Length: 189
Image (tube, rainbow, N blue to C red):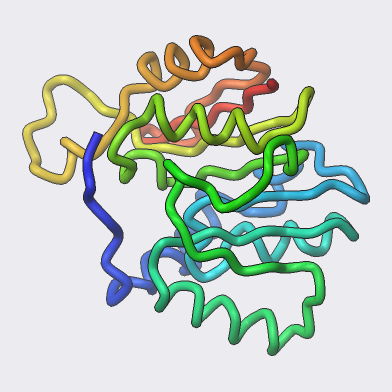
């Protein structure tokens, strides 16, 4: 894929009223069917857009993984501000998740898989840390063949994403386009 990484100076893009209107985190998280004791892993957690509301849905651990220390610092401030005891910050990348096998019941990958070097390697790691019957929520920007804007090269076509997930043993249980530019997949191991 790419080694493109999100610029932390543009943090306001990750959590603003327009994004919350288009992608209400609580509504999206309901698709994962997070159980009261489930362990959740938020890949590329950033400032906690999904990790923070996920922490209120479970008494289990919510692991917030990000490669960027500034993102983790900002999330740590929020965790302390809200006195959240079940969020655990992890520094690392998706192709080498610093967790044991079969540890997470639910995994969130929101607008982050297009940033990995190897999508198959990332999905292999997701499969490794996800428990049997676990669920993955993937939200990404659709790649359209006619687009020539440089930023579009960092997108993954939904057909490619579904193919890679299925090649790694995932079953697609939900697929939708919440906006014209975004697709959402819920896949079960």
